[in-house]
Image (cartoon, rainbow, N blue to C red; front, side, top):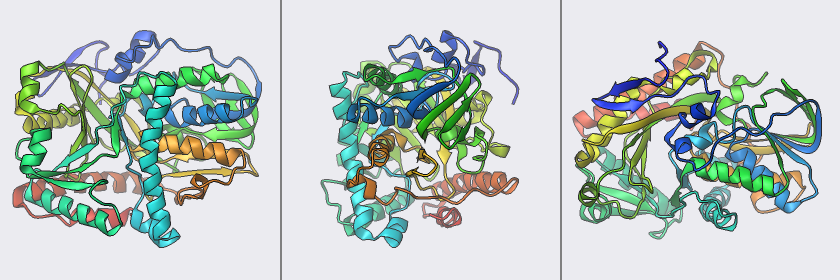
Length: 484
């Protein structure tokens, strides 16, 4: 893909937008990474880099949600610990500063698989703990005065076709069989759904209260300041080039620590020996300009719920505090060899499709200018199952593989790593994702072929359902192929 001139305005579906700079190196460039970083209320000035060898008790590799939550809870539990966070760019440079801002109870892992391996009660316990985790994020935002625009209004997943309605109604019935009642999830008929948000062609929606929306970059930047207040050292512009037992190698020196926490998510494949551990899959987003009040009166959405629909190729949206629609979706290709590159953040065809879907759902917003486009990699394990764990023998701890559902799950990971590292036997250290090991992804070219074939199959399934009105079985086949 040819590189776009820096600072150039480009066109997607008739809208002008500002593209990302492929080589973030200055304050201005960091702001250009996403709408969220552009509006983070922080000068984004990089903290000092590591300068020479260093010793500490806990070294955290990665300055995103997982790394910062872990540092936060450890520092609060044991203030005497010497903790250092090492970040290649600035805190929030990765998915933590680019995501859709859903702090949801969604967990990346099949509940059925969990039940088969650990029992039905364990699967339900994990889900219930995710409900609690959403509130825990809000509690810390309040306690630490983090202005992350935390608003717990739930999620609406609309059915915009007969096939989607069939699937979503079945999902509600499945939740009932798991013991989750109307207070946890329920079906809204078309008039009920329209009272909350008017979506073109909506046949109804599934509502769950277990989700908040946040400003992702304000959350991650606020966490970085909170851990510093707790005595944690944060080194930015410090790239980890390798992780060994009780040792992190960087270009600036070696860090010796009793515990090493790997919190690298979508960038994990860059570390030696981990190329096939997590596949980086890109998700892309757009943001409109602030919409006028007459448009919002036509659309509704006064509750600021997180919003999606029942298609297979996921979309997600929120109404921002300053009155924009921020919307994202999948569809960007997987790049051979698990490559991660800033140029992959910009896929005009995917942006055009996201804008098309936005216009189709909310025609009243069709005239809105798209002011920001951005993207970034997610960490995807082979079985699409998140994990957290700590190997005492090597001193290496890890968490991740969130498949895009990491805003809340990373908080649970941070609390779990705190307890594991401190040797505490608690209810969360006994949850079924603790110690889970996903098998490695296939070598190339099979990884490239499989990942992109699955992507195309999901897109085909959506087109087929739109044309026929009948559910497509192809998505179920893809799910089985990836082990879900």
